[in-house]
Image (cartoon, rainbow, N blue to C red; front, side):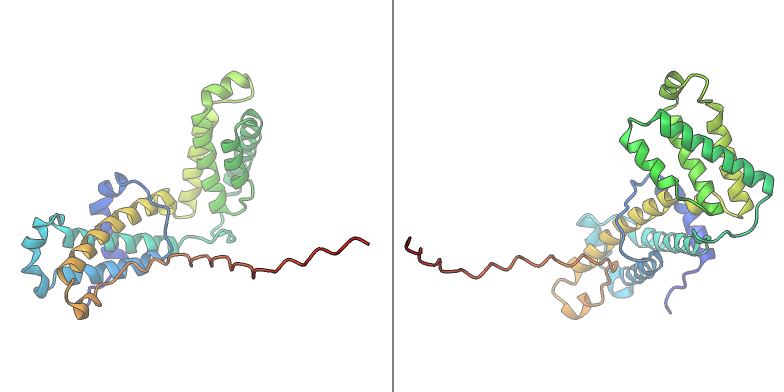
Length: 263
């Protein structure tokens, strides 16, 4: 019977792997749904742990296969499924979601506006900072504003010394902690945490999963390299490569016309 993926089992797996996920470099390249990849990971772990393969594992480990790869891949698949389930239940950017207290919303709007104005002027010569601010300005929903405050706080902390020097009396370092506190309070009001909306966690979970999946898949491809029927059973992540750009069609050669005699 196929292994069942669920948010509950995924949360347990994610908790078990959280330190490894946090220590894994993020990988932003993904052209497949996390939940689809997780299902393929469970399928691959099942194949590698099957009776027809397990007897060959000592030989495969001698070739460099990571010890414990089957359990690691299974856990990573469940953790990835958990992250997918979290993302699917986030409020959409266009949705106001549950109402937050008016006083809190007013304070969020004021702090966000003040930081946008202060950082926009104080970092006007920094193209990277201006790019970050340009991406923050269009935010409109509760979730947007909570994430915006965290982004603005990070940017302000990164440039705090320069801002205090360049804008004495106009930039208050205390606004950084204030923005972070408001961001957390907003997420609490929405029933979310920073981890729930952290793209970085998803990227690191995907990166760990991808490395384990690649290791496990390479082992089966090696083992079944001379068995086409078995090899066809080995899943891939489902990543789609962009279609190759068509080559330029050479123009038809033309025969130059004979010069016209001058009259």
